[in-house]
Picture: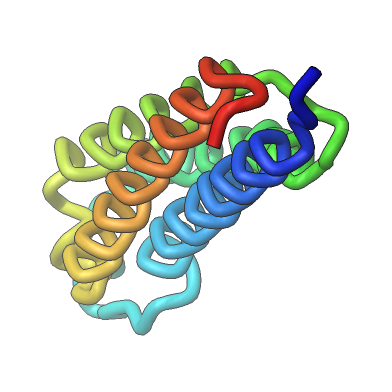
Amino acid sequence: MRDSTPSAAVRHVWRGLAASLVAVAWAALGYGLILSEHDQQAWDDLEAGGRFTANLFVYLPYLALTLPVAVVVVLGLLPASRLLSPLVVATVGIPVFAWWVTVQDYLFDAQPHLSSSLVGCLTADAVAAMAVTGAWIAAGRPGRE
């Protein structure tokens, strides 16, 4: 019987890389939304309804989804976890949420660095998708190198 330890190690490396890149993608999006330099004049020019809409439909969902993304990242880094489905959901969900942020075009005036953060987010997520694919391929070949 062949030892499947090398294959398990390769699978764990791919899964850990994917989890780390999911965290980087989510953090890049958060940086663009929350921590990047903002244009106070553009925020002041928004009427109260626009600020309320941004808080309700962009910032609140981002904050609410941060905990599930963190759980997915931790599960992806655990050596005992064999499930790839949470990472797949995260790598699909992050670009969907990034698309939702781009639909809110008024945010680009108020957060000028948001577009570069979105590019970084989508790049990290694309590489995470490749890493999840590598983990999936390694999981499909137990005991082989």
